[in-house]
Length: 110
Image (cartoon, rainbow, N blue to C red):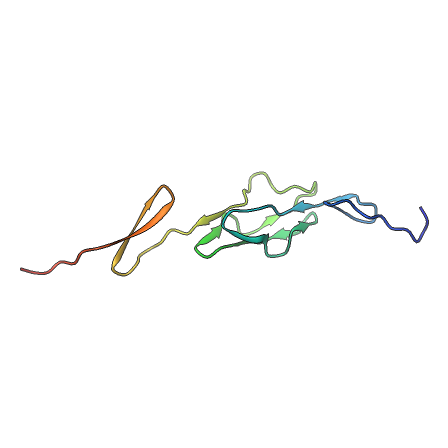
């Protein structure tokens, strides 16, 4: 190689000799696009902060790219629904992952 030449890395690789494998943030249901606040491609040791839609929370606070360019297998990229606590004048029912609101009746003394 001549001193003034540089490698052009294939997608998913970085470094002077394209020796560093990168992690790629993939599609996550109920998340932003791209799903990570920091972008799409990550070098080993870099962290993804999952950005979930309103009403959803990331399964993990952060995800760290591994030395081999893969995400930890024990951390699933997921945005899980945040269970509702209380809604004034209503009750929350959860059925097969779908939240519905029902009105509660009121009582009066006779």
